[in-house]
Image (cartoon, rainbow, N blue to C red; front, side):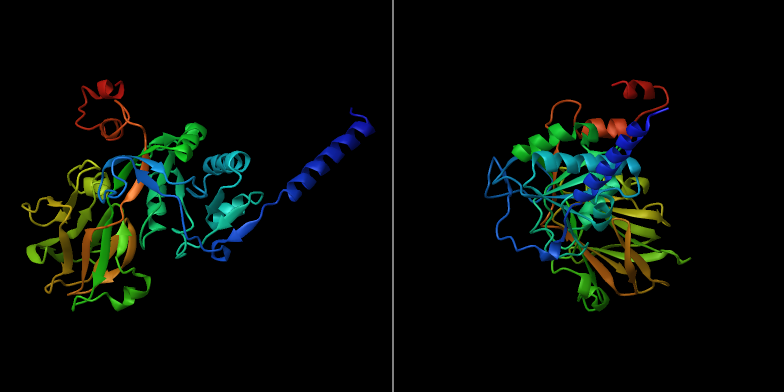
Length: 381
């Protein structure tokens, strides 16, 4: 039995712990209340700083000045991810205290003791106030990060895997200290992943009025694919596909996809489309469950301009989806114009060498061309 003095000491210690916790409550600032930034650090390619690439390619780059603002995006509703986010926030506070940390509201609510900047999803100042994006989660978290910059340019993105498999997750969370230190110091290897610029048009070729308020001049930025599908309608979609203003074909199917090389291993792959290397400068046009046996996927040059239009003989509208997010329905005569975006996503990658890149990924994640006999051989590589 503890003595009364020991019990009193423990009670005092608990009270001190609670008081200390309350005293450490952080300051949460709204992004809109920050002063404007007129300069920000940039990643400058070593080879030719004046001509950064506009499509997928690996480039060794260094910071023009040390990053001063980091945006952290993570999978929500996962206790393990929340703990990892807490460790990352503590590391920044202890080691890089001058770096400003930007988060979404749910992150700020889960970490009240940290000094954080809270942003709204559609904030026009998010890019100007962000030097580096860090994601913790799966491939879907990376797509969410891309959607935060769906109106234009995206800062460099550093992705950490929380144990799930994915093509966009080069670093395990266990290595975050070494990876963050190397990233902030530079140089870093950058893979520029193509995005698509997507613009919904009316029958006269003008931006749809019902989409104009949320639509940027250069179009919505899409990382994986633009999809037109029949949605909940029982009739098959009837879609005209135009290549550089020439009618390529009319597809009768559940839908049509236009995918990037990054998106080639997503919805495109499930629909029977080809796998494309992320550095390939191509667009992939793929039917979803077509009525015709002769309608095969088509590989188009990255410079192509593609327009998918609801055909005049269509019996129902089609649902427009961008990276799996439903935008709205397009009626007969309306269309979506798609082309390569001028703003690819700069993804920080592993430093190269055998067993670290795309070849390893398609073998380990997709078990590429693996039969029942040699599947163990592939896993043991």
